[in-house]
Image (cartoon, rainbow, N blue to C red; front, top):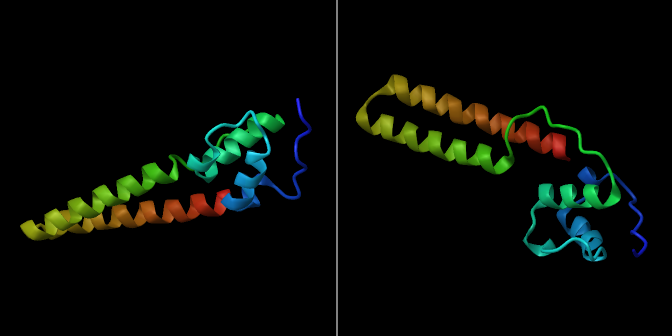
Length: 109
């Protein structure tokens, strides 16, 4: 096995571009260009033998953004129907999930 490139800083603090450059130097990792930041970090941790700690914030960024889109759509539908109580509930839910995405982004950075 070839020598692994040295890491200057934490994987979570690196940009996607930096992570890809490192991953391209490691032949065990396939499909580097199709991976997002979370997938790159996970693959690199596996190769380097770094243990992944479970995250406290539930869901991935993609799941949260899908929920936000769903609640925005439901809010628009409720507004069209004139049900302001349901509209307000869905709008607040979308807002809460947006806050979770920001929190998740802070934890990943």
